[in-house]
Image (cartoon, rainbow, N blue to C red; front, side):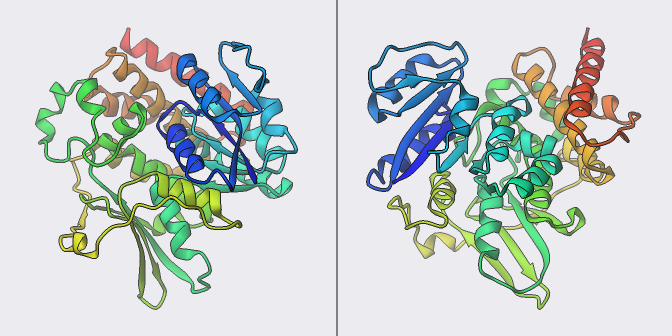
Length: 370
């Protein structure tokens, strides 16, 4: 039995991971669950899956004889744990991820903000401690599946993007977009923040960075194509010109299962598709002017890792402000450009410097919107 810990069990990815575990009860043991504020859902999950340990932001003890409240840091350091799936969101959630890596754990990561903001630091610490970081996002997972066991030299990685919730809107209409509209994705069911990022194409910017960090591949050799159907999740091109693609339904349980089953027997969840569903696949270039955040960021991420960290932090702050209805949708790219264009981030890459940059940028943005 592989002992699994899920950090962020009550969110979309967390609940889907539990569904995969439920389909494989003889192979996967839910060993620990943690959540934020959704205590009612966490308690129901504990009652159903009987994890040995659990944690939550309120430090709420449910008084269950079979499951014990424990600090998340101690949970991820537990020697009994075989795999930790991080379904939490936001770059501030890096501490348990960092501690699990220091403990040499195998982890599955859906948290784009953490890998983009702290990636080079985390990858180096993982190397030093023998930890393995497996991508859960559909696109990096697809790349992993395409290159797994193939020794041919890569010339290009191609990420696909649905185009997000407003792919059919003219940019002149963006000023009227509400948070409720931005939280509805045409193809996927995802968390609020990542769905907004999909609509601005910032999720694709972060996947470029994530792909570069995880697979040690140059940013300028990673392309993006709009693929409205969300069936081809990524492609890799080899130096001989051949291209390998990973194709599956828009179902996050498939990449979750791939990570959970790596280096162990196959798991049972399946969601097969018919080849006849592939009779109308479309691919197109990202149109300049359609996604202002993407237009600015595609060159900005080439400035260096600390600039990438700053970009991730600014985007996170701005999306939160938009979801709280404190700024408009069109203010996201405007404030992003205004905040970052003249800032220099030439310090050493360190956790302390990134935390300091977060405070400076947060104060700068708050002053701009007052």
